[in-house]
Image (cartoon, rainbow, N blue to C red; front, side, top):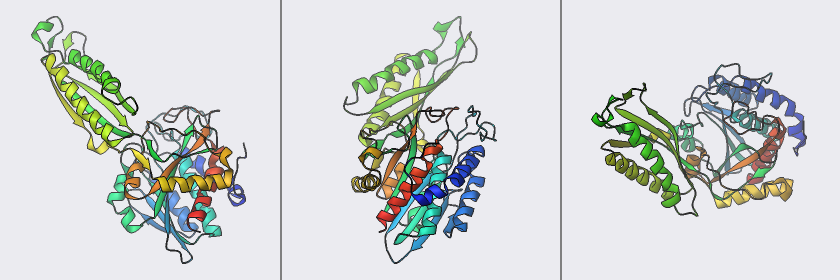
Length: 392
């Protein structure tokens, strides 16, 4: 194990928290099914003296700890859900739940926040209120919005809220900050193409929706290259194309499923407009009809870090680790994160911690991925430093 920078109090409980992380890894739960994980989190927080509130967002857990007379409140958020992936790591603590895996490091994020929670409850070297938010269903199912809809910031008003995520490929334990647009919006778009089915040997008596769909796929590739400012970031990916069941049958409809991403709200809106225009026009040119649907339940805005909060969070890291402890040239990511909706309601910052590139260091959402325990103590120590600085 690499001993990265950590506070002595966090180092003292590091092995305990690694064991906790690996227990969570071995018992992953999908979005809104994090019952055992929530029980574990709530039990630990109660044991350490937090006021615990359950039920926000279904399986969400919020811990509140007040100390002194300060009137400021800081929120820290960790995600708890796993992914529908069959684990292939071969680890002794690999998933015990077939087809479910912590392939994004949420087990690590939860353990990092729990380690910080235990230390802060024991030392109480802050003056104000600490709100710990353990969120369900980050993986595309809108857990953050559900918690907000259930009154998260009405029940627990925060002056600022922060979250972190591990990132494979970045130097292990180093922290990355970027003010402004940091992660992309995401929209799931379905294009249904309706034609006229028939015999594959008599295509002239049909309207082939697969042909129209193929033309739509190709036309969509022109949006980023010809309709988006080259200085802006945008992604239009056709991830699924379904049509027909037999080689000698022309289907009566085809369906395309798209993932659409942008770093700016206006670019996001432009992409949806242009996708709709192109799909309808291409389908019409083949005598077919296209219907474009944007899944409102799978829409997340760009994650935009607040400048003041990000500057503060970065300075805390510099004061502790020096510039050498930071990722020097942090760039925006085209991945998405529903913490974005919390940042629309409350100032704050989302940061990265490097997961390294060694064993298990493949990209997240991969069946071979594992969270790097070497960075757990550093992440937890950073949360402690941030809370103590914010509530000083």
